[in-house]
Image (tube, rainbow, N blue to C red; front, side, top):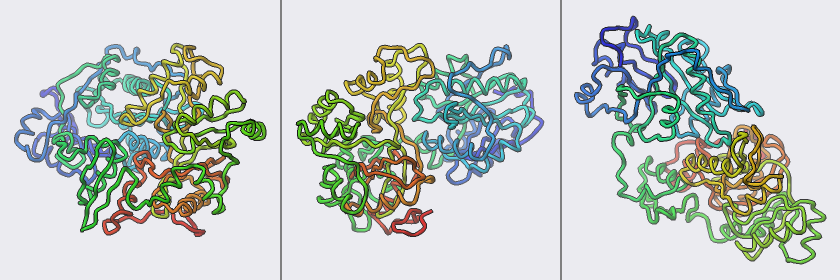
Length: 572
């Protein structure tokens, strides 16, 4: 903690970061004024007070307003500044933020990581006009996409810190990223920048149970110091100072049911967990009661459910409505299947009934592979569909009550070579990251399908993948088997939105995930793949999917109009 005999030359320092403010306690001569600064926290923000002398005394005197943050503070002392240059990570670069678009990309990563979103304009203003603020982004050398971010504050420049210190905030990495090492690269890059500036040390705060981050920091030489953070008792922080007791079975819910329960509770709708593991809820408000299973509700009738359940029926129904579908046939396990393959060149084989990508084989080109794919699909459903493979992006559109609420491109899982690890090891590491990012809902199975996909690409699971080599390890983009998702709602061509709405209308379903294969999300070309009667709404945060779903069930509680409308009108 700051030496009590040294006083900063600037008083009452508060720095706004867009998601909340940092209140530097060592700059406040009066603890009451420190408290007043925290009391000025804006709605939906998360302010943090740090470096206050005797923080436990302050909290003990104001127990109903404030609490000690259950985090550790770690410090790296720059004994040899020349030692802190960042090690290269092939395929990645780190640079300073140079546009408002970078700040928007940072905010998107915050949301994906379940962090409090930030004010993009304020971040951009800070990066331009405040030399004590450092915003770094990690970018993919191949695509240029922002895949990680870290924020730093130069204490010496901000308030002439007598300790000549600095601090790290908001380390976040795109949870869908297949490449390891991004977090460490960002931390080392920030350390190098502060060392270059002549700072003496860098602090960071990490939640006590974030074992992965703590292990990273300790490997890098950070050591725990007795510095405590203080936060207000607000709704955002509630789980930190008053852990919710699971009296209603909420903790058993998966993310797809929990997002609906949370939205309902926030509106004053009574939530009864009927079956936590199954995701069944009873929602009651104003005399109306609706049973849901994740995004499936009593408003979806049996006919619509059966149309989605059988992919052959869904194809027929939407085709009759004028929607394009790929050529396909029901497998007869005869020479006619081979003839269709020869004509199509490459096909997708899938069970007529099934979900979560089970039993699907993509890119079948030979008769032997077709036989294996048919047998694999038949294990999941005796009726098997063979479709011509159409190249392009796997686009999921969430349609709720005749409107497209979210659109996202789904991609199959891939790994990136390090030159040291086997493909099996890379898959296992990527699977752990995907599982952690999705609360156990996504993992890459190392099964015959994965082994065949790797073999078809010319590799074996125990081969060492060359450095920076990308390898797709499963053909399907299903999220449950390790696929990733990227929001494209703002890039979506209105024609594709209209097709999704028309497909949902043809099926007669109020809530659905329409899957299209498209050359580009900004173009008009597409083919319909299938409709899902129970789309995972949590996969599309921060798009207001849960809000739109609860609006449908309880329209009197609705407050927000959604942008995408059905019909030929301008849908921008």
